[in-house]
Image (tube, rainbow, N blue to C red; front, side, top):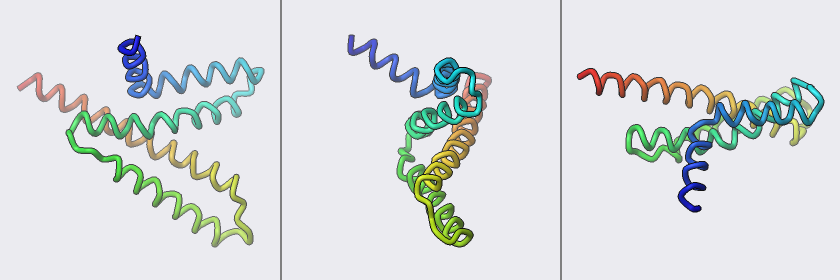
Length: 130
C-alpha cells in the first residue's frame, strides 16, 4: 500500500499539468462553469505542487539540490512585488498582495518547469543518439 501511495504521489508531483487540468475541471463543475474563478483556483493548487516538482526535476536531472535557489528566487519575487506595491499604493493590502505574489510564483515556476523538462528531453535525446 505504501508503494502504491509513493507511486501516485510521485506521478502527481511530476505531472503538475494533470493536477491543473483535474482541479480546473473539478472547480468548473463545482462553481457552475465560472471559468475565471476555476482557472485561478486551479493555478493556486498547481503552484504548491510546482514548488516540489521543479526542485525534484532539477535534482533528478543534474543531481544537485536546487531547493535553496528556488526558494531564494521566490523570496526575491515577493520582495520586489512588495516594494512595487509599497511605492505605488498609499497602503499595502496584504491579502491582494499575497494573491498577486502567489500567481507570479505560478508563472515563474511554470516557466522554469517547462525549461527544465525541455532541457531534460534534449539531454535524453542526445544521450540516446550518441
